[in-house]
Length: 113
Image (cartoon, rainbow, N blue to C red; front, side, top):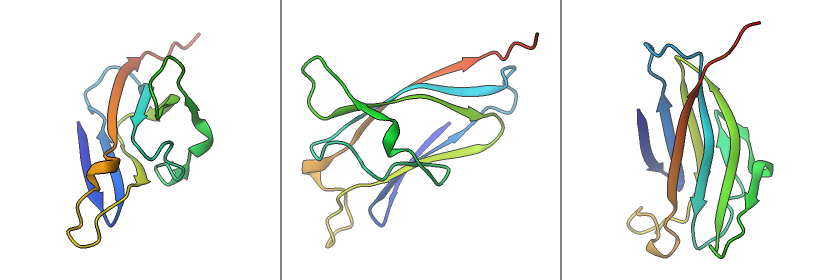
C-alpha cells in the first residue's frame, strides 16, 4: 500500500510491503518525478539522501527524473520524501510546482544458489 502526505513542505510516500508476499523484496524499478521546479535535490529514502541517484530523461519531456533500481526490504515501512514548495498561508502545495509521481512496482524473487 502507498500512502501520500505533505507535512511542513515535505512530500512523503510511505510503502507498506505485503507481509504475505512470497517474494523477499519490494523493488522500485523506476520512480519518475515530474515538476516545474526540476529535480528535487533533497530526496531521502528512509532518511538516506538519494539526490545523486537521479538522472534526467531524454526524449523531450522537461523536468522528468528517474530514481533507478531502489530495492527495499519486505515487511517494513519505507518512506520516500522531499521538500516541495508550499503556500505559507494555506499550507497547500503550490499549483505551479505540483509534483507527479509514477511508480512501477515490481516484485523480484531472490534466488539462492
